[in-house]
Length: 232
Image (cartoon, rainbow, N blue to C red; front, top):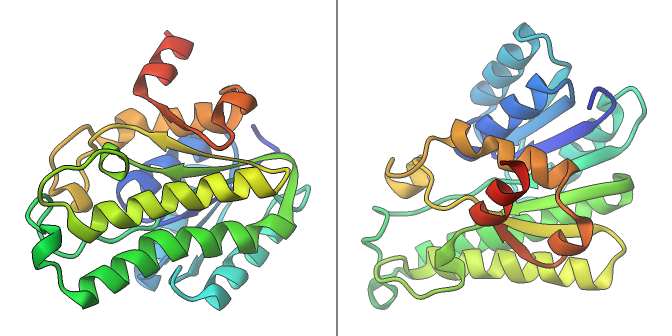
């Protein structure tokens, strides 16, 4: 994996940070983007201290020009140029996980969930496409709330369903492999800290980027069962 360049949005915390660490441990060049510039700087420093080649850009995925700068940085970061893996992990949740019912959701929360978690995935993939190397893969973290109604998840769940639809659209309309990975409930700020440790599922994204069958991944959602069956 030494020659791979991996771009991770939301790469300073939660699943994104664990995924960045996992790819760095495998020898990949890792480029992270996130809204908090100080956190980006800290993450890049930690990755470099671990021996990885890393870079980062303060990025708000709601702003396609921010995303454009991030993917251009990533495309120049590796020794071979271009991007081999994109993990669109940036996301927000306004409110307490499970306590934001749709019928009481504010318009502001709805709009920002959609812009960050839905449109942000669209911008990430669209801006990355011209920079993807042959055989590149785009991975979108998702969860069951995107496909199955669950009380209290309101417009967050709607935005995750949007992200899955965005991934399917790019898979259908381009030659790139674009798919979703569902690691189950992960203990992050978005979930209220309840669930699996992000480090315990980060390997799923390395698998999705390298060994998961492309035909199974493209336009689909692969979950813990597929990962565990393939790697046990």
